[in-house]
Length: 271
Image (cartoon, rainbow, N blue to C red; front, side, top):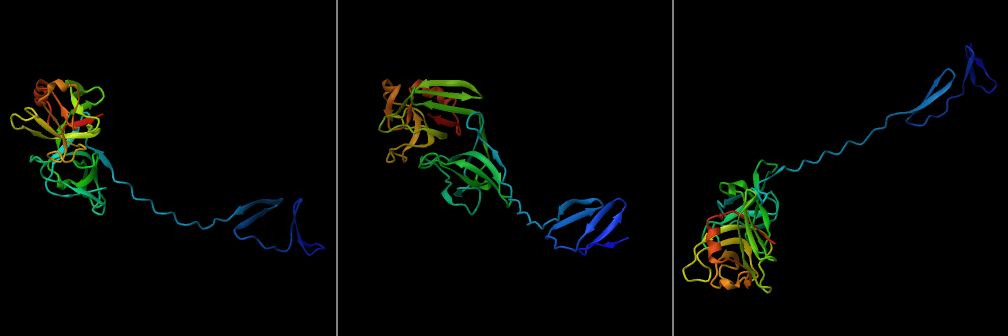
């Protein structure tokens, strides 16, 4: 039976255990005190309201490589003078425009690097740009380019050893000594590609054949705006050496052999 203690608290007899329940005291918000026969078992904290989780960021669009510029590359002609953007979005900053023809007249060529699709479902392609300064890239809608062509070759030009090597499907199929730019007008280093094949007029210093690259030399007032080319020479005794204004020169026999092997869209690595 309940009895009243001298201090006003009540005692409850429960077998051999006494639990003293004093006048209720304030309980902290969010804390529940658990009492059982024999004493306090523990303190449980009530669940507190939590802030709603921030919405997950939209995943970045997947990017698919189109060219490794070594064993497999893809290139295309332009379908129009589309704006080239810094990123795959109509809102991105413009970095240039596609053009239909090269400075010498043949259809312009663009090396395709990557492909993605934006949030609206529009496919985009990242391309190398034949423009000053060297090394520029940008994005254009897929519809701005024609069909993609495959290339499995790589032409490497070493300015230190004065050697050029053409590799196809991982196998060397051509090599030759070369002439490159003078120290004052060096052949630019970087990643480029073959964008045109030309037959110079007979009797010129360029020999029987010339390939225009996407690289530009320091000498911008040169005919065609300073496009770096691979061509012949009227001074074969200067090869190997550094006799040019930025172009790569070959002896006639080596140029004829290369002419049977080098194709449009071939990546060119100049080191």
